[in-house]
Image 1: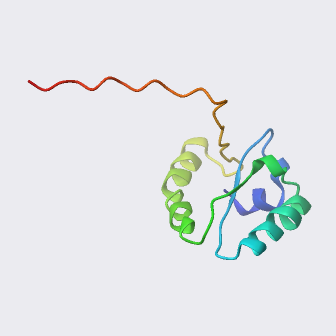
Image 2: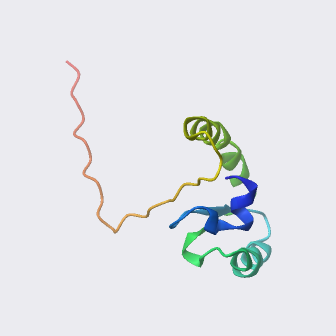
Image 3: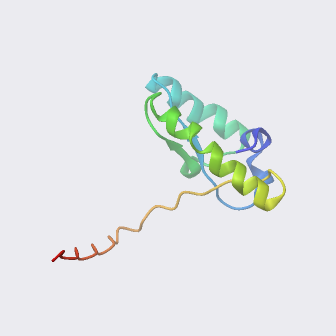
Length: 98
């Protein structure tokens, strides 16, 4: 997301998600519980992805972010991860190859 949204999440209306990761679990908790809340993030919108290896996945989000920015013509946007209410999708039956 755009840096301005990180420090002022209200620039994007509604719920949207902030991802955090790092090797120090206590530091991640400190960031989530204090710094992110100080900026205005709700606890339910902070998603801790675990150790620092998750940073590679976050870097790979950049190409999608750039395409969205290009499509919208500006940067004040973010995404929201919506968790399932527990209903699992039905598996698609496998097609048999003759």
